Picture 1 (cartoon, rainbow, N blue to C red):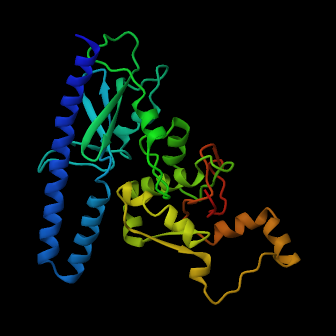
Picture 2: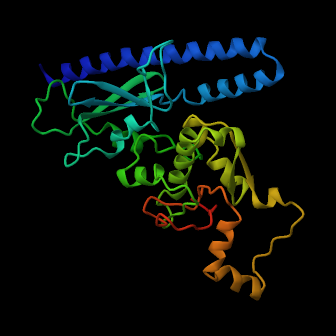
Length: 311
């Protein structure tokens, strides 16, 4: 089959599936709207949050597909979608364990994945596909070769808001996002290395794997309102709404902050034991959001202060 015909056929097939996913999303949004109309105040707040969560994943709902060695196809997206009463998901949440190979599988360690497909959409329309064949010994039946993911990044409109990197997380970034350490985790890196983006994705992952965080509340602290506005759409786009953002000045409006610490205060902050004192003051542990990076983290078993810094 000519290459252009094969590409067109695959685009049609993926469009049909993506359309069905949006149909399911619309049904859930209608259910939330009905619940909001008939609910008591407490229930109405829950339905309102659910409605906002479903609306936030409209753009780029589905962005990938895995084909395993046993022929199973799993679609990866911003949240999980199920048919009523079904056990198998129509769409896997990117944070689910079964979705992890989408970010970590390589030809050297394929984790049972034969083919990884990146699906690029504009609105609800599938515009491009990009396949990676991870099993070089497998027959290439209907595979596509392209640079859809790269081109999507290069041609994306600049909006003045931080975009998520859920479709392009690299393996080392994914390891930080899914790290099992229960204490405070600091992600470090130079300017522009994706510190804040990785930290926000880790927060979304923690909220998915530790549901109590949604009920207890999560506070994201940033250096300024401009910064918080810049990152404001990342967590909703990852399926999380139950987050409050604030600046240090907003939390303590009556406290005057100077640019220079008194000598004694500066020396105290610089001592190694300061990290231990901060960790002791946070018995539940937390994830450092902002001021993280795509490269390194504090070693497991060590505690360090959560850092809220510039991306």
